Image 1 (cartoon, one colour):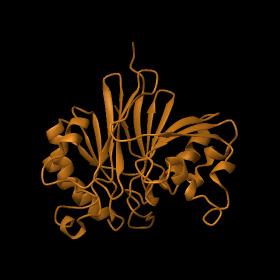
Image 2: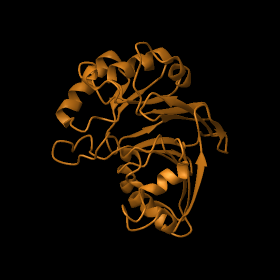
Image 3: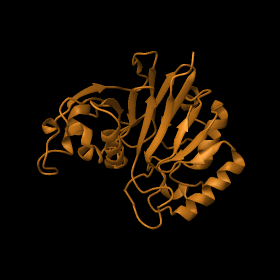
Image 4: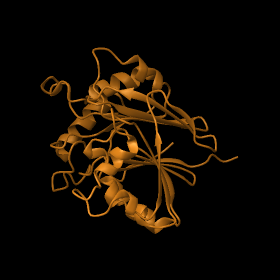
Length: 275
């Protein structure tokens, strides 16, 4: 029996702020959004500005549209595209949003907050699609049906963030954005990523830059390689690029990283990886 399609597409790869312009043409300037397609099942990791372009693509390819959106955390660069996700405005479409509550706010309230009248002309309740919310936390495990399994682990980021792992048919993808590494490889992340086919990792800084940004909740490409090697990950994708990083600088980082870990690539908008 032929294997079902398991494909990862990058629609937004930046951190903090969208930075489209002449210096980010090759790698892209939109913030975090990754599509995971397993046959007809649509999964979306984060809803940064890249989700706008994903939405336009989906409108051309299928109807009605249903999917599951996993939010790592609700800092702006990971949710700011959702109010412009066109499929969510169409009656008959259905989306389930997964994420973590914070202190006194439910995940649903956090997502609705950026769309209150003071910030946006249409409320989340005013979107036409059926939208449901599901709370997740550190160590959550879910059977998503059709033998697709989801797992989460907490990452080291101000106010917390979740990493996600999707497993299907002996293949897996790990999405680890917005995490600050420790002095040694995090044993929880190592176990989480063990033998994964694809590890997407927050590589916002370089080791040289990192000391100036302690406590910001981000890591380096060098630490990504250490984790990938320790976990036995097959392929590493550098992700959540710094907003000030030009295409030329990204090319240099990518080449240097590949000398240390050959099966490594820097995420760019439009990149498609088949597992």
